[in-house]
Amino acid sequence: SSAFVAPRGAANASLMPRRSDSRSDSRPRRGAGGRGRSRSPPRRSRRDDSRDRRRRSRSGGKEHNLAEWGTSGVIVDLKGSGFGFIRPDTGKVNDKDLYFHCTAVNKNCPFDELRVNDEVSYEAIIDERKNHPTARNVTLKNGGSSKKREASRSDSRRR
Image (cartoon, rainbow, N blue to C red; front, side):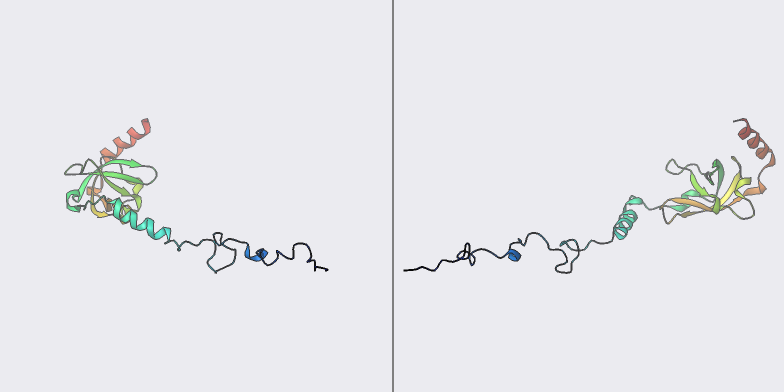
């Protein structure tokens, strides 16, 4: 009797998986699901995280008592890049002098006219960005001493 001979591989065709089904579900398909590149949940904004962390850790849990910085002192250091340090009349606070920026100097007395050892009055505030005490409205007391000014000027020129 003549037997029907199936074409080669036809008998097993129903047992073989179709090519489109051969992908495993462990690998994400491109464009499938509309999720983009990752299956993990979306990240929170890095900017939000870093700002939260900075606000918590920068102060170190210390509350600043601005009263201990006083309202008057002597300039102990000036930097050409536009900032300086004031030693309060009561002395250093936590072994630090009070920072001030050239933009915090009173308009009536330009930063360039300030000299080391000049007596100044100021208002102590907390710098919002750095969470450190800083001085604003820095003003020369008594217009600054001209003798001190000449001495500090000649000292700086000798260096």
